[in-house]
Length: 388
Ligand SMILES: [Mg+2]
Image (cartoon, rainbow, N blue to C red; front, top):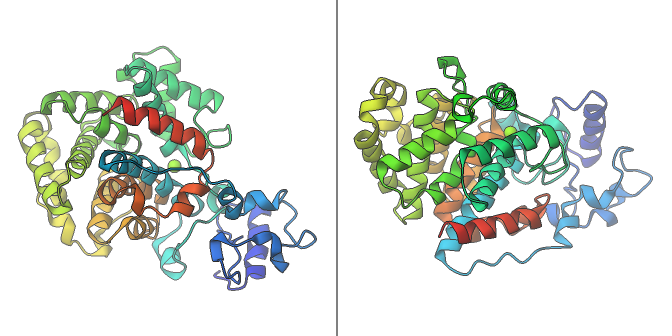
């Protein structure tokens, strides 16, 4: 059901909350406010204390203006920082935009496209909430900041899963099954690189969604070293060759964009890289990457793009949105509005769009809305120094 007035939307929201908030997406922002998403909800007559939904404990916290009241200074000093912060915040913002509408259908998104930050929805989380995609990416960033080892990454994963470290509100939600099984194995003391599923059915997008930091950390390695490092990091949760090759492709593509190549040229160079560095080991996987490796994906029709959690569908969707949008904002909103695995696809697309268009192209109010943005910024700052 698509509603129009803010009051109707709140009613839908309340009902959604009572029902466990599994389906409907709410719009607590005030559409009548002249400032729209940045507006001062405290002065909105619909947001008066006696009228607000009962579960809204703190009006300010539900309003993105709350975060913007306390903005942090995030100026970038040079092109390298513009690309690094662009990639990392771009990834996180994509995740945040996708969380409230995860699992919605494409038809729902076409009828009611996401155009701004939303809250609640699928997991009933407040504004600026990121999910496992960002959490697991932070686990890798933290491990690199402290001196990379696969054991350190594994340890961070366990602390995420068991203690809620690297989460926006101290609790992990939205963990994929493959990652959950792998984490159980890590906890049981199995060697981390043997923990990821190796069956053909284990090819969800769960390692692709957390591999981006390797593009920064591994950019100076030679081809084979980069391939090996990427394989190792993927193997922790996803050990099948298809997942590993998807990660290799994405990492190399991100590196090419970081180098400053136009997206068309970066894609060509990435295809050449994969063909010359992965032909031997991954030859039997190439048919699954056909549309990507022959460049057809760029000209595919929207109907051919399946935005599911299958790693090939996800990588195709990510590349497709990058080539069918101009600017960071368009790219991530197009990704979210494909429906399906919205948070992961928008995060992965947001990572490369952030590198390509730079930090300064990401809407500032979106970044300021991110939960725990100060801590993220600190981690990214340290990472930026470490990988230069
Ligand atoms: Mg997620």
